[in-house]
Image 1: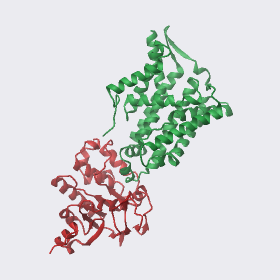
Image 2: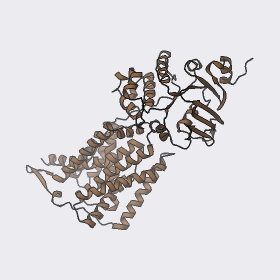
Image 3: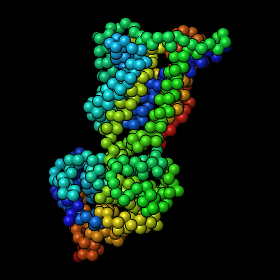
Image 4: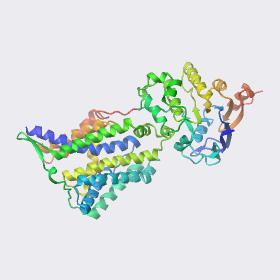
Length: 288
Length: 235
């Protein structure tokens, strides 16, 4: 039964990873750009939430109403007035720009908030759990995270397939030159995509901040987990991203169960194995 | 009255100059043919009109207004639509979705999904098929249909016949005759002289980035065109 519990916890943790990965995958999908500051922006969102909660004293879950739109706006402006300019020319430019951004965010947060561990207090839901027998217990909050991430993927898919703007996203992803000939302003689409991606990652950052503690320096690790989930799931497949996230979550908790030092390592091991067997990921949907 | 007026267009790609001071004017309701060999600058000309490329000199006037500084997506909402070389349908979208994206600019007019399916009945069966699985001819029909969805006043078509079988080309030109007869202003680019002489009211020929000959369909002889096309002097 211990192992059943380990798997359950892993699946729930995977929900969080899938949320991180969804934003990364959207940005890569629409503009073929890798945002190296992705993890740091989620930590930034957690700190913004900490500020909001400090000022108005509300539950951090309620503070999402402010934090998510705010980070959406940050994403839109960031893409429109900085990152769009890096998309002309070689692939190295956006990498360098977002790497620089990552350094700036980490050090800015360190300056403003020190290196202390912080946490967001959401009250009783954080520790409430549902016990199934002696050894298996669902935490309500981790379950909520998984539900949220499934919901985000469902909504994002509906947006991309059923709305005119969503189709414009996919058309731009296929061929931005041809998309412009349809009257689509690709710079606006890119900015919207970054806004949506960062709104999702802000959600992930705040939920993570409630679930565990965070410091200014943990962003890059989130980025790596998000990468692993996206690559394992296969580029272009949102459900694949969920499966990738869950695989990574399960691998890590199984690793932790084997030995406390092995969790992250087993996660990377599974990632490398998937990459070796299926380099395009499990559910790759890209059209060549 | 002229719908499109180009003056002194000299578009370049980096260090390579593709057009040399090209001027031309196209009347409303006219179908205008641009012919020339590979690399003569035909596609560059269309892309400059559509706004994908910009000329450092000269003006592009559409319906009396200067549009040379407008980006491509804004020219679409003014009513300029380009069917690009190589078709460039959106491969991961279905046929139906490709057409829907064509209407993104929300220009009003006679062209909607029903009208396009009416002109290209072959697309009806394929509507839920992913565009990457279409044959070349089907993709070309889709690319033209998609451009029509934006309800253009000026339709630019770049090498319809490229890589297609003669029978398919004939079908496409029949469909395009419908479009032309609906009163749409069309600029057609072709390498195939015979094809274009059937549809175009007026033609011009480009040679190495310069306009070498221009005139009514009936007013230019085949010899003159051949001479302009290859840059040779016969006789």
